[in-house]
Length: 254
Image (cartoon, rainbow, N blue to C red; front, side):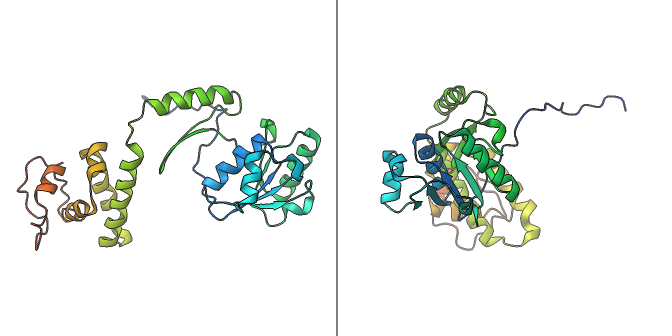
């Protein structure tokens, strides 16, 4: 057909996902510096972590997490039975042959695995991540340049508004409150459309200033589909008894 314009396929990338591993069982083989970074990543995602490594191989950070019960710990080298009832495997040991053997066992059992420093033996990669509360931004070089990923991540982080994470927390709270007043599944498209309007109307600074009382007042306008300026919402505190949002007495609607 004439005038067809579709995105060009550019192979060689990874599918970037936010993998929810809360309460999933993650096995970390190794206890050195690389293992410490992997352990922190999965603990931040609320996984249940087991570390397998001889005690003499633990670096101070991993030893700290073992000592404080933040991870389960097995004081020995890896054994195949360690893969029983595991959802994910991360290896970080200075033994390429042993690492490859673990990789092969994971493939037999269909367990997602990451073998440190061996991109060809990884189902997924760890990128360089910026974290600000609920905000997470990952930069990946698909295993080709981890150091450059870190440099690019810092550049991106420095360009972000300082209050981005707090603003996201507020918008998340508003969404929760909206679901309570409009819980029906068929309301989904309407909820989404209204939340888009809210996000487009308010700046990050506006969202950070919002208190729960302001959110409750704003939700009165959901039925009408309107989004008033934050200054109007704050000015009308205490004036919403019996108000259903059906008329626009405040200028500057979104």
